[in-house]
Each structure stands twice: as structure tokens, then as C-alpha cells.
Length: 274
Image (cartoon, rainbow, N blue to C red; front, side, top):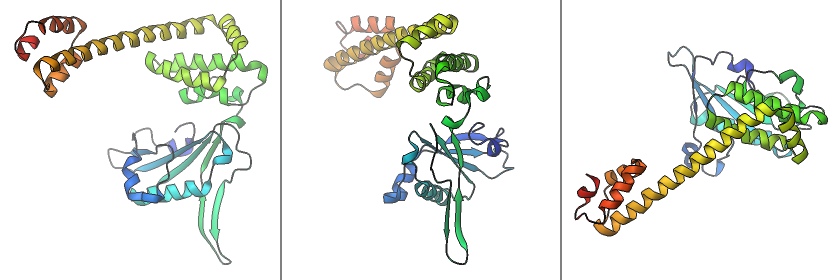
């Protein structure tokens, strides 16, 4: 919000931000349901300001954008949430050439609807202006900005550096690294250049990837052992209570092993789980 709607977001720092799930609107909108990206609701717990709804739509291909569709959606949302405080924001992944910026419905005497939105065309922004930003969203989007073709690897490295500096959660780092990889699309030669010129960043992300790959394998094996034990228990004792299923799912690897051995000799379910 600070990047794509800076002026409107300036007073939102103290607000509670929550996504508005679109499923709750689908039944009421019926055939008028228009699915855009998830809107965000800004609420001030102390009640000093009325809630504000941010509607963010991302367009990979500007030719698919419809200002009429966006206006319809904002009006529907305003009606359903009983508010007239709605901020429409459109994020164009590349350029926004030829896209309608304003919608006016008028007659000979007056204008009866005047609708426009905040627009950010990432492909029209200069990488140089944002390369050192302390906003994580900005750094992740550096590959989408305008830069000389010969500097793609530098742009990629600066995005990854921002990710490691501004996001401390390793799982989130890996998730966001996927975005950078998709946006930058380095070929084999560029990947080799990155490994050579930015060895520290490359090694750091490689270690994270390996660690969470191993963690995923371990979690998968543990889940498999739990499912096998559940099947053994059902075959011997019949339908399992929800509480038993929960205990099996949360049990440690050692506990699962002990319970699996007890299944062979136990006559009652509680003897296995004692």
C-alpha cells in the first residue's frame, strides 16, 4: 500500500489491515460477481477514522484491463460494505500504453459519474530510482522495472539482496525468491554470471533452499507414518474418534513408532495410545 497508494496509505500506519474474502460477496452478487484481486480493509481500532477499502487489481497484460469492470466492482463492493471510502489501485506488471485512466458517464448538460483509479505501471519505472528502496515489495519488483538489458543480473542481485535484508523469515524468503526468479527469467549464462559475481547472495539462498527441501521431505515422511498408523488402527478398532486422529497427526516420530508396535498386541485402542 505504501508503494502503490502512497498518499492514501500515509495515514494507515496505525490501522489494522485485513483481506476481504471475495467468497462472502459471490452469493449476493450472483451473476454480477466480478473476481479481482483481494481487497484490503483498513480499520482504526480507536474509531477515529472510518474504515477504508483498498481495491488492488494486478494486470499482467494491460490489454485485458477494463475500467468498466473495475468501476462495477468498486461500486458493488461499496454497496455491500455500506461505505463510500474505496481506493481503486491497478498495478500493471509492464507498461500501460493505451489504457483508459478515467471513465465519465455524461449527457449534454452534466457528468453523472466520474471514475478514475491510482495506477502503477512497473515497466515504466526506472530501476535506478528504486534499487536501494527499503520497501520489500519494491525490491521484489525491481526485475519488472525499466533497466538496460546488459544489467539484468545486477537487477536480479539487487532484488535478492533486498529480500535477504528486509525479510527475516527463511520460509518467506524462499517464497518471495520464486517471484524474483519468475520476473527476472535468467538464462543459464546469466545464472552462471550471478553465481560468479554475487557468490555470497547465491550461497545464502542456496543454503535456505536445501534446508527447506530437506525439511519438506522429513515432514512428508512423518505424515506418511501417521497415515499408516491411522490405517492400522482403523483396521483393528474401527472408526477413530476425532481426538485420536488429532493425537496421531501431532505425535512425534518416536511416539508413532511406539504406537505402531503396540497395535500388534493391544486389545483396546486406549492400550495403544496410553
